[in-house]
Image (tube, rainbow, N blue to C red; front, side, top):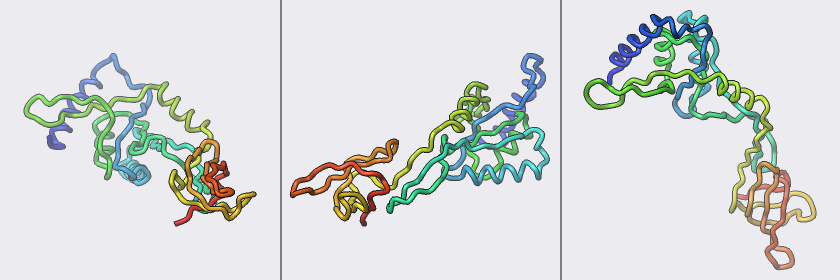
Length: 212
């Protein structure tokens, strides 16, 4: 299906909705938009620029990438504050849906499509037009509430099987292999050779350093 035919289907649908007194749009609604992997921030920046350039700030009012706080633990045990995307590959947009705003979003680089219901083609094969569907108020409220209230997620670069050396504590300078990682507890278990026997020892992330 060409973009032109998709536009035509949306235009007809939008006109019908606007003419219906049963669905008045009294407030902007939130929509989810699928974007190319890893391009969420780029899409947000491009959209914010296009919104101003095309003078649609009164109809596309907010662009968000829901995130939760995270702590990244490096190989040397160092910690760095960062953010973790809740929905990788998606951007949330609060807007009044009409043909113009639909075009602004769809023509933004790295935007794939709105999340919605696929409408079957009248003729031929191939994918049909996707009718954008707004998110429910309760769903939006839950997403942003969870983002604000979530405890920081600990992200570690170590995993089961990694070889590490202990940096501090009674087992300093011992070497062993990681057998269990517990990010939520900020701990891991390492199999150390103690008195000639392999013994699992629980350690803090910052007590070990990953070896190449």
